[in-house]
Image (cartoon, rainbow, N blue to C red; front, top):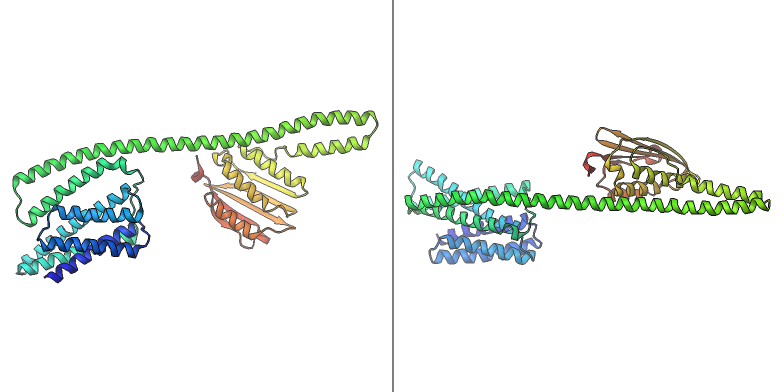
Length: 402
């Protein structure tokens, strides 16, 4: 029986360490499992030697797992503590189910006490093994991203509830339960459940406020970036206005001395400068209209032949600074191409971007890198045989809503 108990403790310890290590994605997993398993087995065998299986045994095992995991992760989080507590509760549930199944089998077959004990242990470990494998296989995850100090009251109440459940379970197993103790446990459990609901509601309210503050900060950052971009455009236009004033002075001087060719050349230069700020499109998306027009006019002035077909609605996405940087970087890939046909068309919840080019080539590595860098916008990219068919990008509109 000593060897059997050792094997049962070994299975329980390995499963506990494996689950926590894989669930929390701990580095050097094999070393972690070996270390925590050895500590658990030593503690469990020491308890078996003194014939102790009370609540302190559970507290000791949880302390070993929490302490060892903190040592490996180099920090303590609520998720870490809660996962250990939750898995320990699962061990209780598996033991209860194993005992129930073993009791049912004993009612069908006349088994000895030793056989019943072996059956209880084997059934409990089978249930624990199956449950552990299912959770790890399907990668169930909890969303527990708040700080540990915000959950301290929840952890305290959870531990208290765990002690009550463990005490009642131990009383049932050993046939030492009384009506008085059971009523007290039920009353305390009810009070804890009510307090649980109150605390969770408070934490949820606090979390919502925190998320709202983060959202407002993001909006403020986006607005600052938009303002910075508009200031840049305004400064460029202001510089052009100053140039215009000095150009008129020079034109007047050239006309006075009869230098008509210089006058024509100067006027031509300024016409090209003004072309840069001509709106190519007007979609009621002011940031996109200005940004796109500046880029396209710059390409036209460099000698490229560009055709535009822009069919888009008014949407926050098009005034997003990062989206405009993405589109500017995309057009930069086609600077060596003489002819471009740029098409933007909304189909349902997608923006379809298609660029066909001729008389030139693009850098495929830079194109691939660009798609990877701006993966937050691009849902699908078709760049196969782009020399003939151009490139086609699908961008989700609603997903990028502010």
